[in-house]
Length: 115
Image (cartoon, rainbow, N blue to C red; front, side, top):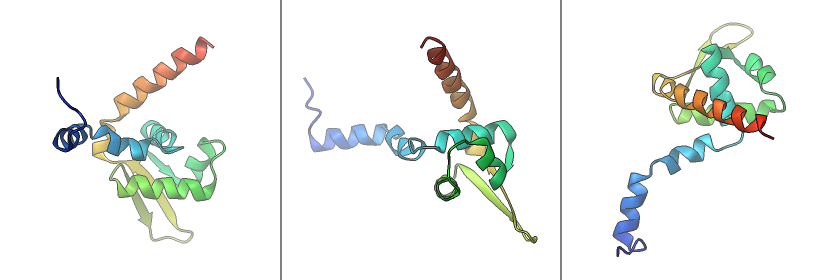
């Protein structure tokens, strides 16, 4: 029987379970909704994104967008115009996540309909 509490075994389990790292980002409130909206519309401006997510404040949306950008999940393009124009889009890396988001959306709808 293996002892999973040993230091070397725990480190190995943590290294194999990188989902915990990404879940720190995706598990934050609003993150998945932001990514879902970006996957549907491809390129979205800040106010358009805010209107599409009911109940999110501008401050929280800005914070989540910054976090997602720092993690390399979205890009932010700033146009030197007045007023300032900023667009957000999924990175190539995150586009692989679209299938997972679609599957998760189907799963949610399935269970919502049973309640």
